[in-house]
Length: 469
Image (cartoon, rainbow, N blue to C red; front, side, top):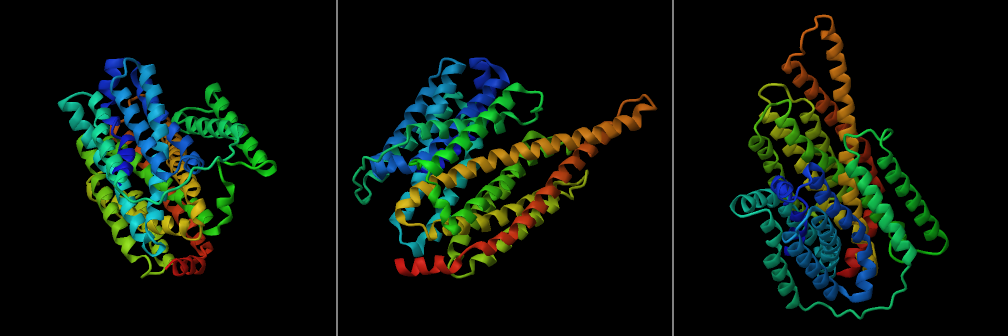
């Protein structure tokens, strides 16, 4: 749990320290983007490798090694003398963090019997939420009181505590296996995920057709994914285990994990921008609007963990998707004035819906998988969550930009005859309308995918729990 929260926090804790970091090391906004993107890329690349690494080194040794790499890379980030150095160290930090998340989830599933998986995954999910909740304010306090370098150094005592705590646990010994590895497959996996992540992260707000860099990255990603699929079909692929998708419960849950992550993260990105933009809130007030949703979502995940086994999965999932859609619909109806209540209410309703979804989805994803496939599946599951974050944000930001451009062009045409400036209130109203259109599209998407919960094989999941008991 400690390692999970530490890893999750580090994706966001550096955000508030970026202005000071950029000032000290130079490089401007582009350096800040690379500091964030390099970590996310490395995390996404190494998550699917966790299964093979566990078979090779064992769970305990790999967990301690991953946390150790994370700590060492954090200290190197704290001492980084230049922009290029901190980008390199962030990649190393992301490599350790990419293994921590799926491995921690898989170890918890091994430690506890299947009838307790729902409750444990709820607690683990809550720990996953603690990081993003506490990360930004903690990073701001550390940066103000000391320096951006201490934002990374704080991982040393936390990581050592995680290593000590797991050292005294009586984990089942696992002999290492000399598992054959497909070197070409690993390279293709890294190229595919890295190029795709770079395309999505760096493509926000830019025209792909007029950017040779983005077109090249997208083409590389497509070619690498195609090559991986061909190799998996003809010669097998020992790192990215495609056979986990043969389990219908995992395949459906993985799809919903991707969709839920995308819709949730887009709202987290849009709401502060909406508050500081068309609504005219201060940065503090705009950032505070997402605090209630984060807290309630964490509480809802814990409650849902206790409801699993008592309430039918489909009832929980259907309720979650309806609340997700309802919250997004409320956000699409935000007025230009006195919008704070509706902003917080819509955001909170959506977060409560997400809290009803994450734990049942995680439980169903691993309910019918054999223990030997859990770590591989956890790596794939983590990868899809990460790609859901990035692709959802990139897609909806592109839609938002297009809507804003269209509405601004209409205003320009309206005021062209008078040759006068466009009133700021009219521009804010147009931008608010663009945000409303995006939230409405996401609400429709939530309703469209909801019927897919009928594909879950609940009888198979229930029988697996009974056999384990």
